[in-house]
Length: 129
Image (tube, rainbow, N blue to C red; front, side, top):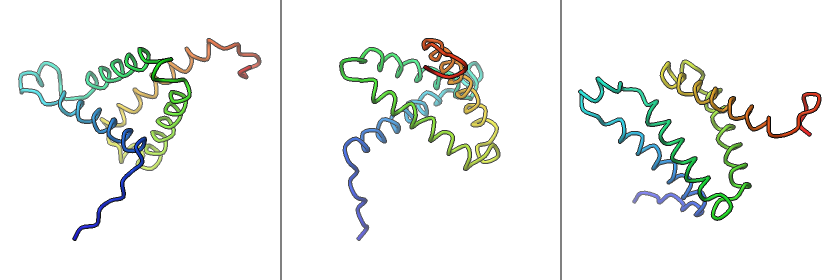
């Protein structure tokens, strides 16, 4: 008889499920007819951008009610850390050209958002105050 995997705590299971749903939505968005592929290409730029905007809107709409700053701070650092570890482990060769391009684009966008956010705070002598 096959061994059952131990049940994850609710938060862990919910987070994994949310990530699986995002991956599924992107995969479904990529299922297109040959004509649609000809017009829109076969890369995931648009489905990725759409999910970023949709999830950003969802979190902002629920901020202060169901979503608090603490969870945003934690997940921001978690996803940045995990992305860095994955890239370090796999390297650009392991990621391949297309996924490397997706990662580089995401990092450029993060860099812009970080700079924009840092400008909100008074910076003295290169250090956050």
